[in-house]
Image 1 (cartoon, each protein chain N blue to C red):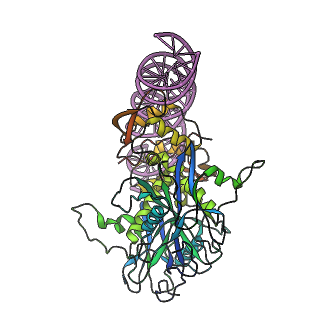
Image 2: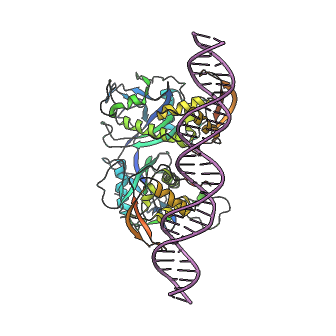
Image 3: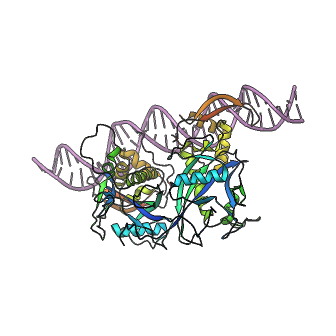
Length: 256
Length: 256
DNA sequence: ATCATAGTCGTCTTCCTGACGATAAACACC
DNA sequence: GGTGTTTATCGTCAGGAAGACGACTATGAT
């Protein structure tokens, strides 16, 4: 077969799936929707849908994101009009196992979205319901032996694997980039940022060392001037995300 | 439109493109093939081809790699029989701009391959020729102002962008993983490994600090017992890649 | 007033890194 | 055989980053 014969090629369906992560109540949560039709009817799945014939992959992901959550994503690679609350969007990976969808050959380009806590999930046009679920709960299927408690049904298709890859990407990327601020509102305190790291990594961080680290990393945070007491205790300085996208030196995830 | 209607979906062609990198004569080089047919006839392009109907994406990439180079790739995610010289293979990113191929809608899943210097490029079955080209040369198109010298024709399609993404992935990944050993033969010296880092990053590294660093990182290198003088000078100890895949602490790329 | 909570500033020790001197073991050449 | 060159390897030292943790500050709750 000629390597590029445009007249004879196996047709594929191409979709985008979204791993939308946020931090709620000290836990890393993902957006899942309930499937209204077979296969996997009634099971939870990642939001997603077909890529349209004249649509770029990132644009398809952003469109699905708006449809499912109302969030306006901002893909650094595809500059958008920047309309208000821009969540972070980036391509994650592509999944094309021949058997991943029992109906047909579907190649899915997964995208990762990091959003602040604000939005309440919005049900789609169908009878689908949507919710934020802690990722620990969604991925507990392959938990260690001796786990007790009810295990929810696993995610549809290979979405557990996609979600796990997205979570791992987020966990590693906040180490060396300023992406953790994507989980925060436009103005936030050092403590709020620390709780993001703690929730995403699932560890406890020393507040004093964390404060020294983030305020000492050039370009990470810029003071906005105000203070807040919304977390209780002494008023905390408010910051905005600085221009730096790569942190040098990086934040260090405590080992094990 | 229902988000998953298997009977009505826009058909896409799905291909894999390969960014095959190696280090030759102190330079990071990529494998490129000459296109024998329009569009971009006569121009250099990344090797690649269609994904077959019952083939996983990683398997398609490994197959194309064998067809084009004879290399047997080893994708950590898709364990293979491990037949001899296993190059490193990983998925890079997916490119699906509607206009990226003038003939039709093609979504290409790019893969990154890191290989030792050994193999000579093997021409494909067609009249295509293949060669190793320094990435600096292939990507010089958007070089700074005042560049002199002949600029080769840019790569076909969006392959310059794909190559740039692959190079950047390799540059950053050897920082915190042991992937640099994928550029080395099974047994190598500390100096050879250092020259890999120097070629990929385009910097000079202090041999003494580098030696201390890599021999002191647990799991990175294991002595094989032998020595060699193939680089001239005092005999150097031979090592193999250790089991560690993540380096802690990471290698630090000197800033600017 | 007292306590609890959260934020912020310092100190100290340990480890890592970059800069660089010194030595060792091969080869090329005269 | 000396001598120089090349590469490898070990050691030393100063500066900086990070973890552990003490101390103090400014709010709200009781």
